Amino acid sequence: MDARYGDRKRQVIVALRDWLPALASELTTPDLWAESEGVFGILGSELRQNEPIAEATREAFGQDLDEIKEDFESRYRENREAIIAIRREIDQLREASKRLGLSDLKRFAASAVVTLGVEHGSQLASDWLVKVLPLLQRIPELPASIVT
Image (cartoon, rainbow, N blue to C red; front, side, top):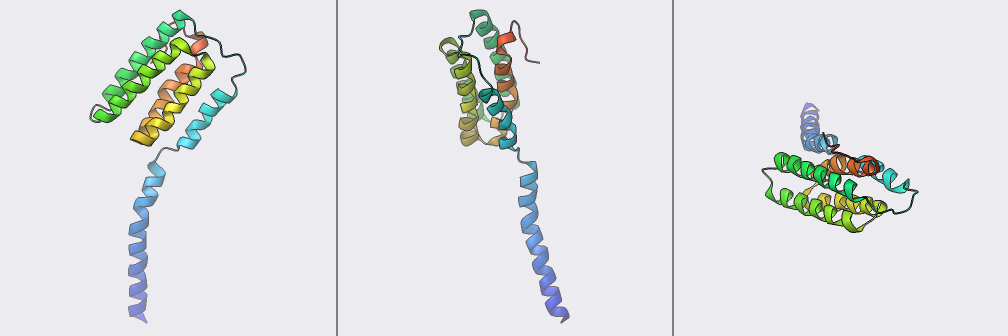
């Protein structure tokens, strides 16, 4: 009877050892669905027309994008592919701000979350959400740099 109890105990310990890393991963992985609720709130609550972005606002937006790019380059300096992806997304966002209205620009920036997440993982996509989308939410009142 004791031998069976010992075998069962070992099985439980092995199962726990296999399960704990998976649990740790679940607890430490960012919840992009929860973070993206804010994105969909930004996009869904956009009731005004897709108005063009004023040139002065675009210039201030471009300066803030430069600061965000520098922050990403510092944070991801060990990951060359991530830096290339961020530069690409920021350059595309800057160009899009010249031809898209505010609503479309927000949708364009939100689509980068998916691209970055698929190509480079949830942490980079989460960082993009935290940095870029609040900036877009404040575009109508963007007379000067707002990135801190």
